[in-house]
Image 1 (cartoon, rainbow, N blue to C red):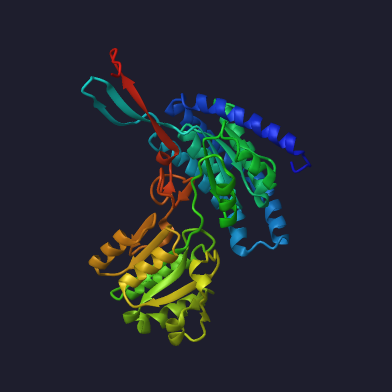
Image 2: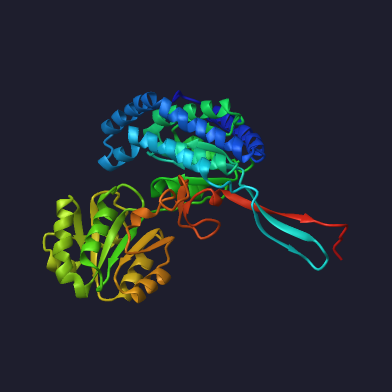
Length: 425
């Protein structure tokens, strides 16, 4: 699939894909809920039936990734295990069980001139998903876009090309057999950036772009797209341990937030500790982090308590490590913690651990992030964990969608107006 193609050949193929997607989107917008659900369930069955082939193709990507020096965290995100394939299939079935977001009346009113106005949810149209490393996005994005009545054009990263091609073929074969319109799900087979740059100018066909990956990819998409983009640049997530925190609870939450899956965007990257509890808490959290293999980078106050921690630099407070590394700062007050998060954070997910409900309320109200937690791990920022089914991404934007994006966030709306001959004066 990676033969040499000229730019004109790539452009012409992409335009054909765009045309097919636009036609498919119109057909999808008229499909019944049961028709869409039948496609989703058939896709789920196909994933499980073809798991051996999916793992075989994924093994090629994993071997190439090891040779290329991908980090253990990146290889973890790339792997298609039996558990992950089963999870993808379960995700598609869960989406099939969710309420159809299309055609919902969001509001209605009658004007003094008797115009009868209705605000109704509709599909967005054609959505392009650009993503790196995680092949499960292929299934998640397909399922959510389909249920919300959207056609999808997928462009995965080169590190997962064999996995993504196998997944796309599996899903489309199953869907087409159940009446899915041709062109509803398409995967771009080229891994070079030229195809992305051309696609980002296809505003005649594509209604929305969603990049999922590293900050450099997302910034490239934003800078080059003539199509609206929903994104998040980084996951600089914080856990703040307040002076009135339950120590054992704080230790459990930090271990989960940092160590469970360090290579994902909702993992904690910075720990803030109130000074009044620091002398008691710092040795306990340091022992736990060392046991888990986490490198600590602390400010001067933390290093007075834990001298073998590396000195944190200004850059550390804005670094998404995606690895077993954490930056740690001792803060004098709750206000200082909120100020630090709002200044250095990425507006993704942040948590406070405290038994003081007044302090918790201030933190939840004043931290300007898409998801804020009281006494819980930041790892819950996920569509599945929020009960949305498989998510298509997480947005730190404030317009249209914020936080985990599920079915509702993949719709727009239009106004339907009934009249009886009214003309504007």
